[in-house]
Image 1 (cartoon, helix red, strand yellow):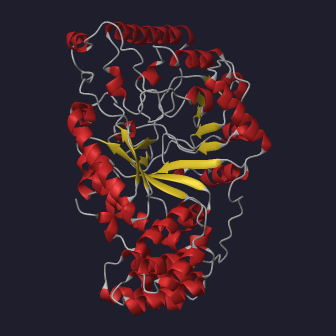
Image 2 (cartoon, one colour):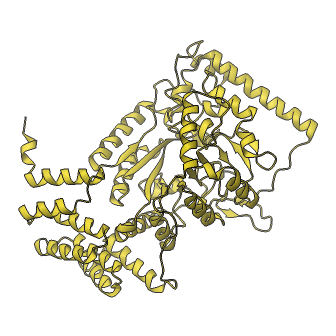
Image 3 (cartoon, helix red, strand yellow):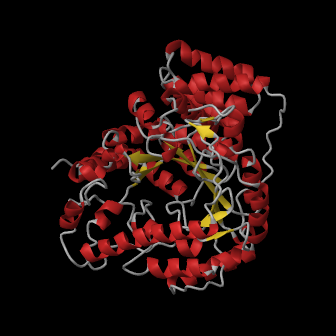
Length: 552
């Protein structure tokens, strides 16, 4: 067997140790890189990383000197040249930065780092407000009340308490239900719908009754959050509250001002990317533009490279896995690495009772598992963290449109498999979902009604009978309907509902069949007695407002 270990030079070994110390927060690397370069003066990886470490400390002149030394040794490499341009922007020497980028483009016309740098300089020169200070706590600090409540909440979750003294430390807050895409994986892609921003009175109640205890807030819901008129207010209020902020975006509205803001905020941002080619991406994410998303990713990378000393955000990609795009997951991971994004989430497709459900990976479980394994290999080679759903079982439930007899036969067993759920779910104890209209549901994956903030104080809903029943059921063999089909990775199904549904057995399936019918009957009786609720007139269709009662 070849001795690969001996092929790694002493300089490379020491370099890897320094990088490991930086990742673990043990060192900034500057002193160690300098010592390494004294002994190996032409070791370019250490030279480039030392320049990067100096730039993070705002020592841009020293970084430029190192990049120039790098160029003297390897003049054909374009990277040191465009990185010099990045440092010059920090020093306010924009014309020199332009020259640096243009020199790269003369030899490498397709260099995104250089071309995006020029676009950013154009924006800076046209910018009227030259200040770019971010007035938020960095990093966010938890208050004693938040910290104490968080510890109590963890204790009550571990003890499986039904009535909680703790407030939820996490929150999903739907900032808007408007969306400029109409994806085929989402019901917005199929029919007109009513869209609105988070109502001001609901936001005020959330601030007063929930925010003081919130550690993590996700301003994501059934829409594109950056379209919300109050997005900035929610974002900045949450950060001043000391909360960690997260949201998912299609990236279409991310421009230089917005990316400047988000790069310097301590937020976690997931960008939806369901394909690595134009055809696949635009067929699934209808209304989107693949080139535009790649341009936004290049802009994010460029601003994070330029503002190294002020980067507090964390970007990742989220990929909804389907039969028609799973083969492109390795290339999505390569795209992530290309744009400096080091984490990719993979989500199982949530069946919607439509023809597109045929794209579910449940139809080809073995192929899905093989391709996910291939993607994991690529991710490990590139150092990208890949978060996958649980493996697909060979035994999968039949399609929803299958006949009753086929569904009965597919149960394969009378009783459920013991411990069929791979894990517990913390959501009923920790993270309510507050909709833009004030309705409260358990989480991002369930629409089960738990209360209405317009009528009832939040903490009363939090410990109401519906929430207690939800907590009891999710620990039983008969979790609520929404939990049963949960597709999120931290839910009871481990992100793969199909594999767990296949283990239910006939008795459990009969129970849910009866529950569904009884709930439907109860709803009809209630409407007969109380009158059908008034539903808002749809005002959005296929990513745009419906104007003058136009027929879509």
